Length: 407
Image (cartoon, rainbow, N blue to C red; front, side, top):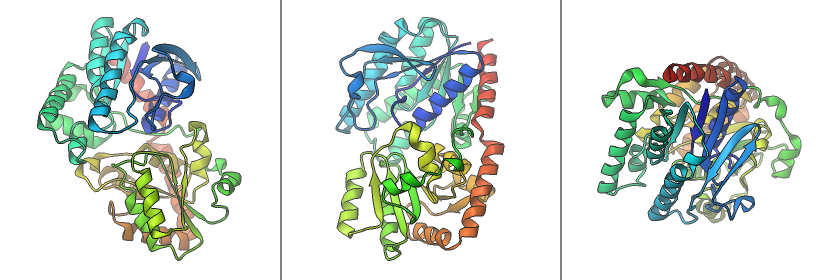
C-alpha cells in the first residue's frame, strides 16, 4: 500500500502526536509499505518556523527513511483565538493546494485530528487522488475545547460540530485512540462497523531502564536526589499549577526535586509561581530533542502525568504514560477514567485526584519513602505494557485494518 499520514505536527518537533505518528510510519514502512507524511513546516511550541526551514513555501525531505512533505503554515506566536485560527486554516489550505501535487497516488490517507480542520483537507485530498479517507481521532474536538473553556463562540462551535460530523460520515474508516473516544462517536449514531480502536502505545525497543543516564541528572541539577519528572507540553490542559502547589507542600524535604521539562503557553505563569513561593525544589528544563527522550524518562525516579479535572479527559491515554511504564518508572497519575483503570490494573503507580496537590504531594512522599514499592511498580509497568501496549502489535492491527479498507 501507498500510505500518507496527514498531520500538522511532525519531527523535528517534539511532542506526543509527533512521536506517535512518526514511529507508526516507520513501523509500517518496515512491513514493506510506501509511507509518507504530509505536514507543516516545524514551528511548535514557540510559534516560529525553525531556522533551517525558513523562507520556503514547500519542500520534500527524508527523515529516518520516511518521506516528509512540508507545506506552508502561518504559525501563531501569540496564542490568541484568531491567531490560532489563522495558523490552522493556513495549513488546512496549503496541505490541499500544495500537497495534491506532492503526495502522488496514495491508496489511503490517514488524517489526524485535532486540528479538526484537517478533516476537510483529508477529505478533499482523497477526492482528488482516489485514496481511502481514514479519520484518526486523538482528541474529541470541539468538545474538549469547549469543556476547557478555550472555545465559547456559539456559531463557531456549531460550525465545528458540523465539520466533525461531516468527516465521520464521509470517512471510509474512523480510528479512535481510546475506548472513551470510540464510545462517544458510536453513541452519537455513527456507523459502528467502520469505527476501530487503535490505542497509544510505545516501541519497547526505544524506551528502557537501560538508558538511565547519571550525567543527564547532573546536568539538570538533580544529581543523586529523588527525581520527580514531568516531560511534555506546559499548557492549559495539563493543569501544572497543581504540581507547583505540590512542590510547595514538600519543600522542606531537600532530597526531592520536581523537574518540568518542555515548553508551552503556561510555562511563564508556572515560573512566576515558583518565584513567588521561593521554591528551591523545582527545576525547569527547556524542551529537549526527541532523540534524548529515552534517557530523560529512564533517568527519572517517578513521573508525573496530570490533566485538568474535566470529564473530557476520562477517556485519555497519554502516550508519555507508556514511555514511563516500559522504562520501569512508576507513574503518579492525575487523570480519571481510562488511564486510571490502566494504572490500577497494572499496579504500576498511584492515581490521584486531578488538580489535587495534597494527594500528589502525599503520593510523591509515599514512593520516596518506600523504595521497594517504587521498584515493584516499575517492574509491573514494564510487564503490563509489553503485553498490552506494544506499538509493534498495534502496527500489526492497523496494517490489517488498512488492507481491509483498501479492498
